[in-house]
Length: 247
Image (cartoon, rainbow, N blue to C red; front, side, top):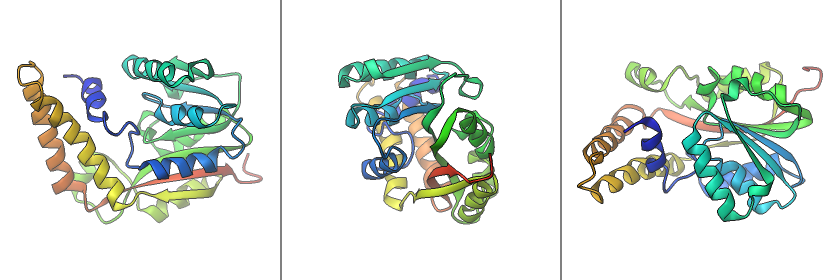
């Protein structure tokens, strides 16, 4: 199984590919889209669940998404047709870091996708290029809630603590106007959903040639979460505006 197949199955019951529950997603969108008629861009949109939810509740919104996964974009197109919002959604199959548009957007989203840009600050730099004056950025990033083990750092990457993460954002010329730190129940629900969905898929298809690999992957990832990073890793989502005088 390739990475896209695993991700698609794992997120069957948790289409927001970050540790956020529905109420948290709604609050973040409310803060980022106060008028309801904005133009919004998602860099690294995957199956475009953020955009689909925004479009479904804001009939005057226009949205664009960018991702390298044709499989994920196909899912997004199918879902957009099913939810009746396809006429207000444009999807671009390309590297989000190199995306160029003549339009400037009122909200730029990149939640859980900073790896695609090489880290938090490069992601904010990409968002800045697309942001309209007075616009907002909604970004989601991991952080270390406690000192991690070497194994956890090797597995997840070089994050900082929460305060340092926010300090880096502020020093880069941004002002947080809203934030959400994912609660324990959100972090746990996300992991259970992902590896439970993958395991259930395998158990329901014992004759499928990919079943054994899927079950093994689910077991490995669940064990890594429980034994390596569950007690140390956190996730923060920030709604940001440009600090006056910072460009």
